[in-house]
Amino acid sequence: MKKLNIGCGKKTKKGYVNLDISKLPGVDIVHDLNKYPWPFKKDEFDEVLCDNVLEHLDDIIKPLEELWKITKHKGIIKIWVPLYPSTGSFADPTHKQIFTFMSFNYFRPEDRLNYYSKARFNIKKRKILFPKHLKIFDYIINIHENIQKFYYIFFPYVINPYFLYIELEVVKK
Image (tube, rainbow, N blue to C red; front, side, top):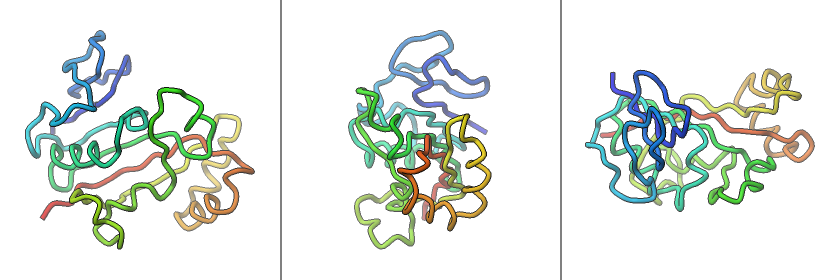
């Protein structure tokens, strides 16, 4: 099973190909993710980690298309991004993209607005994460996706979320 950790920074992982824009200890491949194509073969990986990297890129559609291309059919892509309206989503001046609870829906096979890209993913897991002092909400809100949607529509400014964790399964025909 081949695994990739993109934008790893200093958080390199054993058993993964670690990629970052900077040559840091443990980084296997130095590459700017805003430069296409990425230096990998089609269908090369079974799993890809994207831990707080997508929000730093110039675009969201192109990186998701690259992830789709380099990951095998039914491969899993695990993503963590700051979730709007958390302060972290827009306070960092290096963030170029904002993500909502629904941002990844546009890449599902069944979505009516999926014509922006050929990349297709099934959402296997989606979880709203809260800061440590609000950890209890991780359990309450993430019981069911309908509760997450309800919270995100009506209460995100009252109880501020922190991150979105999402697992995408690659769909190729």
